[in-house]
Length: 526
Length: 104
Image (tube, rainbow over all chains, first blue to last red; front, side, top):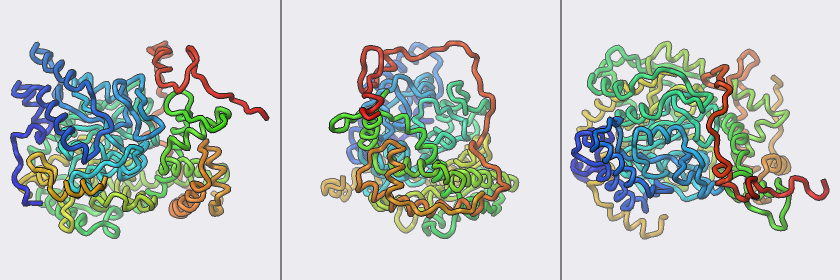
């Protein structure tokens, strides 16, 4: 991939959100120009990528309003005028919100999610809604009812999931920023396989009001970007207490952007204890992922970090516990799709009672993975099995929290690969649900314990030239620590590469669509 | 905690679960799901290995208690907003099929 040439610094869409924000504030750029450039990019490449389920018709109008306010001297927030893509799991009162499901096709919610309202208040420009596995169930975006998203690095490969649309949108320069949601890795794993940055905040750090719920004790909304600073800037916009969410924390959060800037400026990790989780590596991890991870550790050590190995034996049970807790909560959360108040209604032949209509609707409206998990959750909660399954899973959750406590007594941050492999081929794991579930082995523990975690690029795997990601975790409430360490590591890695990882993407704006890619598309891959 | 491993899942059980979950699965789907869920359940049943009686359960990663708001009326959806996504309406109400079947 090194043959693709240098990055064109002039291309608007290749700029990070923080640089765009500076140029918008200085008046060098207008929001209309920036927004138009991204809409043009979407028109150019989204036929291939399919990151978006809906593109906003109001983006340019909103951008013009922000430009007008700026001309009049209004005091605007740091990211005012910067476009942002929104995962379709979040309610938007001006755009359909389907969560990737047929059962919500065309549904326009009567209210905005709190995070969306915060984007609008900070005057970012919503570009549209991004594709996802149906109700966020999946690791590949192949479970979307509206067709998969394609990885910009290789269109035959998955962009990760469930938030593959948001990750692909920023990786393909269709948007500088996006929102995702992470229940078991749906922000961090897509970041890893698309060469982007994704942050799952501390549970309760970002409001979930208006986020279509998957598993309420695990779900968390967070930023999806190309740089650590951009993630911090977006986190600063969406974070904070919300009275509409009873799980929302009342912490007085520090500026994450300041934390990221401090980390990038220092270039040093002296005094930082970096814990390597023994159970989140080794067997089952792709060789190139392990190699890049080892290099990242060396780089951190050379910058002064103290590398310590920590053991978290209960993590071996994390996937098992997760696939009991998640389906149990999902089967309950998805009961609201009952064909009565909103969404699809299918009347069975010859009519029937409201229950018959409900069953017919859910049969047609839900895809196979959603049905699988609802049935699994119903089973896990069944009388007689409850203690053996759901009850045991909740105990494993306690053990995992204890392992985190113990690990964080010896380390300031914990690290692991963010995903065990690079992006796999579309279709490769679709018929093997269990193999698909194993993709989240590295990310699930953080959700079970509620701690924050970030996925960020750590280089290309030598064997396939595809992105790999490192995960950084911190204790609950210590999100700022991740931004500081993450920004330092990002700066160190980019120094060692002499460029950013994403600038090597074949879909980079300075690159034409590779011929073989175009040929493949004509061959009917999608 | 009883040390009883639940019996393997069979298709009759899957059909029953589907009816509880209000999903009108086809016979083919029931058959396919029985096999898939069997493999998944076998894999996740290992949670009971470490879930000893002395370990307390955790339902929530960062528990908060007594989350109240003042008991005063706030903004609510209008009737039109609430009905905006309804599959069928009758005036200001959601319209549904009969709740009870003829035999009930």
